[in-house]
Image (cartoon, rainbow, N blue to C red; front, top):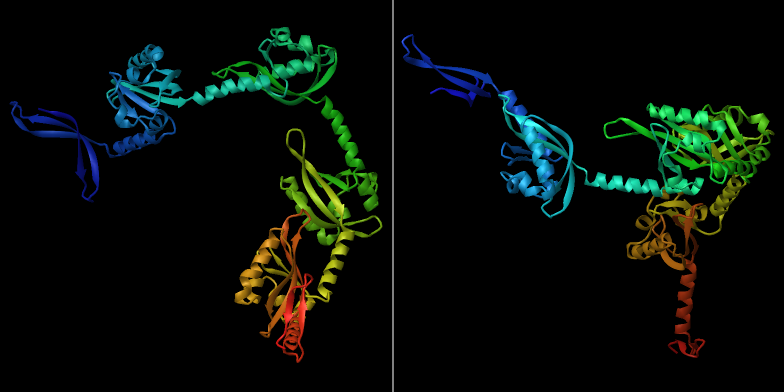
Length: 560
């Protein structure tokens, strides 16, 4: 009794295991007597590894894959199918796919598809409904593929599906969105006759859907001087060459001319065959007027506005920039901004800001000096904004600036006043680290600016028993709740305990964001010692001393 296709493992001399597929054939002598066995084998180690890999890929694929045998019973059910339909492998294996999981009205057509695949006639992109464990109907797009064994015999069908429930809902939603979109959308078939005309197009042009459907778009609604160019755009789109941002006029029912910016998109069916053109438009009649207004506003703005093209050459220079710097528009247009108007020590950093903006990385609040025609150095605070055309391509940089020459001078004056003030002033950032420490604080506490900057005020300079209280005041100020006349102890470098009366003020940047706390203090160590001395003298005086408050209630009553 001979055996074909027997699989067994064989151990190599090196101890490796290989899988062998064996045909065991009886060996006979010339008299027909059995004298042994001959085995013809194949090394199927690689094939088995590959089959396991295929099985793993099928099971972990990001698409529902299921299979049936020749009786229509489920024998493949991958993880994605489990997640999608809700049934585990154990619940479906061996069950009839059509009878148990397909809605009644689709059982006949699904059976037909499976039967055809069982006869070698495969089906692609077949849509059918599948019922989940929870009774939900999902729409599946299926490719039904004939499954064969190694001899080529048909042993079943494998279906690779896609859940298109969302896509179908989305298509309906797209149709609704197109009709209700806040932009005119129209379409033509391959003959140029209108077959899409949404609500916005109706409102904009004045023609109803019934009045335009089936009519030639170009002949019926485009002014004579633009018919040739619009027809050329449609013809190109019908050959797959789409056009973006094409401007053309459209005549309304009332005879008014409106300017439209159009994207002409090729329309294809599910097989990729071109069936027409869809145009998504914008009414830019008002925008064109607005652009002219914007140009006027930029030129008359009360801030210097400067622009350069991709080569760094000036192409925007408003009146305020002219007044501030002294150069007229004619004197700067086409000239290199960095090389001709920026001081040498800042040319590299300004060029970096421009280069980043030309790569789409904008910079806010960049300070740089600008040389006036008279040779005066101005300090400018600049927002460098990437400039793009209607296609979104970067075409340059626009800088909106502020002359902060006076403000910087004032900040330096404020900084000098704080540093030389006759009161200890210190500040912390939002992490509680010291970032302001004036000369009076240096003299009072003994630590230099270098010794305290970046150190934690509370942890390093407040006695342990008072840290929680001081931290609470700082935290409140960082939340915008300022504190006045707060007494707290401060340790000097020499270990002396000072009593300080503090006003804790919230510190904000130019955008109003809290960036820290500034404390303006007074050394009240001597005053507190004097108050204690007065209290002692009153209490031990050789005369009766008493006091009352504003309501006549006793608040002083000495020993005498």
